[in-house]
Length: 128
Image (cartoon, rainbow, N blue to C red; front, side, top):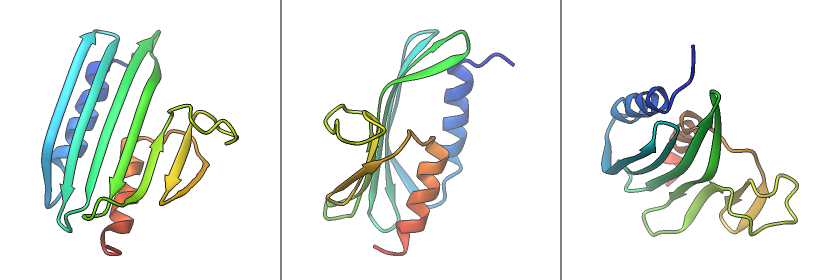
C-alpha cells in the first residue's frame, strides 16, 4: 500500500479521538500539497499536564521525512518532563540533530512516533 499524507493524518486523528479524558485544546492540519503537511496538536490531560505536538512532514516516493518535529510534554507548572525534537542546537549528541530533553538533561534519541509519545505520557500521568 502506498503511504500518503492523508493516511498518516487519519491514523493521528484516530489516536487523538481515542484518548480517554483528554481535552484537545488545539488540532491543526495544514496540508500544503499532497506531499507536504504541518501538524500541530495540544492535548491537556486529566492531571492538567500538557503535550504539544508539532511536525512538518514531506513525503517522496512513499518515504516520509520529518523536516522538523517537536513533542513537548510538561507538568501543570510548565516544567519540562520530556521533549523530543530535531532542532540542531546540541551538536555533541550522537544522534544530532535528533535528541531528547528529560528535565534539564539532553540525551541521544531518534524521532519516536506519536503513538510511542502517547504511551510515554501515560507512564508519567500518575507521577505528577
